[in-house]
Length: 222
Image (cartoon, rainbow, N blue to C red; front, side, top):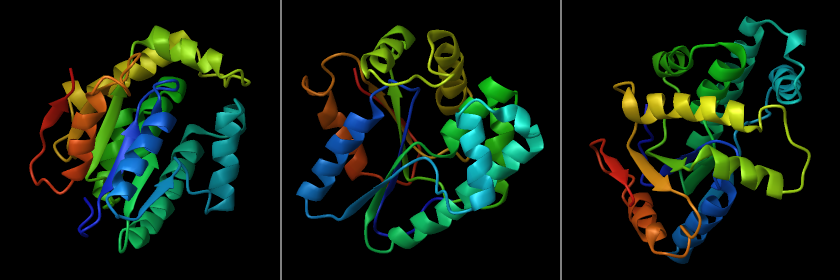
């Protein structure tokens, strides 16, 4: 279910290297400049120690230690706890999440064959809090992969062009081409070079300011 407070819940989604961290910072600065409190959170809650251990093993390419069912349960449990924490925060502030259940769905399908729609349908059936707005950062896979390399950090096992291309395909199916009927509004942000300086952020700011809009519409920046 979507949030029902006067404060909005926004979730940024996109492949590794799509520019979520920078975009999240700019959105946060915009919202706070208007005198509205905002909390930024990450993809996972880490509130359940057992679920956290499984998620860490998956992130560090040690999934063989766990069955697909256990992986599914760990991610589901983590998001249930995170959704509860977000609900508490929404009482007096806007919440901006760097990834949410949609990233879980896309990456678990590509990496472990767990159907993305199955992940989302389960959350929907259990009433997991949904964002008021999804911001999907759409970038060419080659550019995303180059950005990952340019960070100069150790790359995770899924941060390569082949995997990112598959994840991007699942994202587009879930959010754009064949979305579930309960999907919140989606704003597509073409985060290619210069997107933060050439005016495209203005449309994103307007979308972030209108998260209470009741009808789902696809908002694309050119």
